[in-house]
Length: 315
Image (tube, rainbow, N blue to C red; front, side):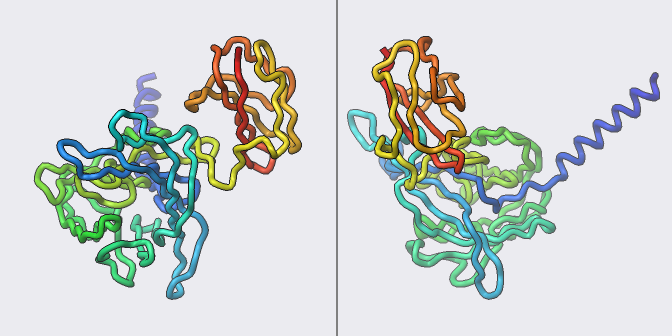
């Protein structure tokens, strides 16, 4: 029996070692960095807008294959007496789409390369017209950061050549999946600015790109489908002219839905996007009696993956 315990113990060690050595790629589709933009207001910065980064599609530059990084501005409001105090709509709703940069990744050597898209970069860019090494996840404690860490959105050159003081595995608090990641920790340009770079995600404070103390900061990070990440893109439908009809409306006990397309999923949400626990694939006799009174959101995903939004009043 003692021998079995010893074997089991070493198996756990090997399993943990394997999980910690498995590389988590950064440059992949179906990954979303939700960002908030802050001004330099004194005594505290104010949120003035928001957007998301996402990789979509490939392109060839100088015979090298890159993944395209897009920037989507997100809808929101300023729910305060003295704006700006930007907050996102729920679900996140994209307003437009702009090509922002190009990335490629050498997964065998755990390196990520960045190639600027000049039209979207204000000010100078230390990469100029060539690619630069923006992440090197192969580094260990005591190694110097040999990558160029670029702040491209406020137009300043930021080159941090600092020593990694620790390597550990942990969860990024802004990662919705709470994935256990390898983390490189170091002190940045300012002695009091401690930085953490998460494998497969980027900077804890600022996502894909290193930032100053203000500017574009990471609000949330999600991997999965648009529906799983609570995102509605600009080409989705928000009106009822697509054939979506809810009856009775207002409703107290049940609702029924008439819809032209084959339905994959129906979900009832609160107006602020919170889940109610009501989810089905049947449009008939959806029980809503346990919901509190007020306006509710109906989120429908058809069998092609397209999302439609409707509303009804719960009595």
